[in-house]
Amino acid sequence: MTRAACLEPMTIVATNTEFRISRCAPTIADVSRAVTEPGDATLGHAPEWLRVIQTAYGHDPLYLSADDGEGRSGLLPAFVLRRPILGTVVASMPFLDCGGPCSSSTALANALVARLIEEARDLGAAAVELRSRRPLSVDAPPMLNKVSLTLALSADPDRLWRAFDANVRSKVRRAGRFGLSVDVGGREYLPTFYDAFAERMRDLGSPVHHPAFLGAVLDAFGPRARVVLVRKGSVTVGGLITIAFGDRVVAPWATCRKDYFALYPNMLVYWEAIRMACSSGFRYFDFGRSSRDSGTYRFKRQWGAEEEQLFWYTIPLGARRRASTPTTGRGASIAASLWRRLPLPVTRTLGPRIRKYLTQ
Image (cartoon, rainbow, N blue to C red):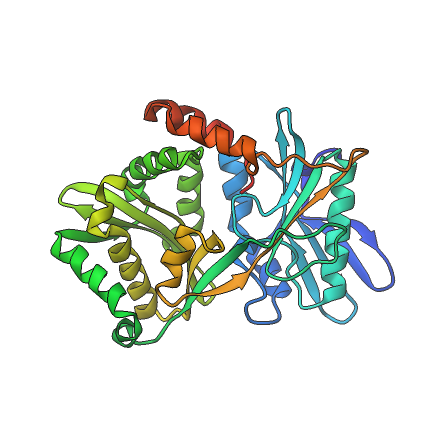
């Protein structure tokens, strides 16, 4: 086997008296076997990403599973991104907040990580990127400025509403008085969402995902993925894409046109998404990641969301032991500033060609 694309249903790559590690084509059953404690798996462990990322961006999967003689199992999803100039990186998981090993066994989790690093080294990768909700036993310090913001839900949306700060409730009501409304749908709402999303990403100085990537997400997750739009009359001014996973609803992508900020569209659309999650019996609403103390962090915290530390590792490989990080530092700030000045049609065309290689 020369490339991760040659993924077979089960190929044993390491074994000893304590455990066996295999390359695997993940299924829902794999995830179910790996998760033996509530909350151990994250959205990044969902098997749907295998099809989404392969279909939209053509990256090769490198999924590892493990089991021991005591009935415990583990799963480590990853993809191989062969980046021009910057070199190959193996990431778990690219484009998502979290990935890393999923197992109730620390020994299995450590073995999976060690094996992934060896596989990446065999591929000639420049680095391995791991994102986890718990510290990992690796030879690199984690980046600790990223946190996940999660709101515990009530079975009664009205009870949750009354628990919100008065300022939050006031802004949601004002959005309604300004004539904003919310619609919920599926893939049919993607084009209008994407128009607002592409515009906002340009304004933020960040390359936008390809519409085919978001379309693949909606196709793969089916009714568990929804597009929630907020409108002013016939104009879509913002929206969310939400995905249900386990006992929570996650909002990985959100947008709002800056010309409408004063109407509080984000307040209304998030409240409607939260309300629907409550009514559907979910226990948590996951706002997604933010940098601590950033504007988006403060926005999410105002709802009562609690932060959960994320552990993001970049493990450099090779002789120089140095990994390229194109999305951080002064160079990234300059690139973002230049990107904001480009015409929207240009960023919509060039953005996806760049975004497919940016793991964050």
